[in-house]
Image 1 (cartoon, rainbow, N blue to C red):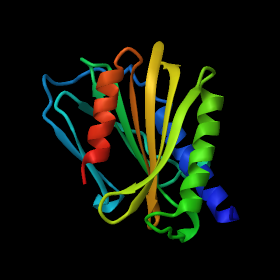
Image 2 (image 1 turned 30 degrees about the vertical axis):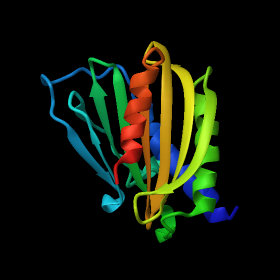
Image 3 (image 1 turned 90 degrees about the vertical axis):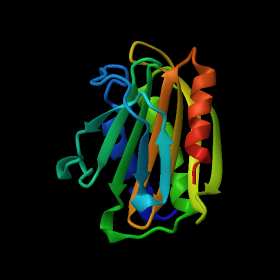
Image 4 (image 1 turned 180 degrees about the vertical axis):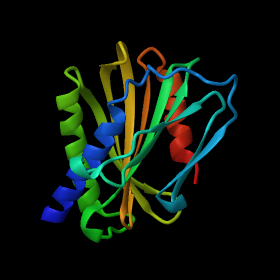
Length: 194
């Protein structure tokens, strides 16, 4: 793995870890029955629609001191199902550009993400990981499914990692462990949209 890929993966994960450190179940709904919401990242290369019921909270941006300048994130929370979707993007350092399906970069990002989650969550348990390409233009994705205790209870987590051009992105779906059917349906909806 190139030195660039290692550094880029670490910075992606640092930015994302800052976004994910927000207690997923601490957010409170601010409106009744919010409408379905279209989410677009990587300049529109990855888009999906969240069903109605999710409220939006902007996450704090990254900063130069922590090496996460350029990182942005949004948390979508469904108070009824207690499901959280975190979407984060960051700029790849050094002005480097990656392909839409950069296997080396995505594989390194996945390994680093799993390591960081294992360190941050004492009972993190990776269930599976997948490599895929989709979104019409062949955008590469890495998916890791896991369990952990977050927000005071057991959770199911699915994280999607991707990159294109000068940006990296992550989509993380966090659901109650008891809502396996709802969790899988939401992940399927996110992955099915093109």
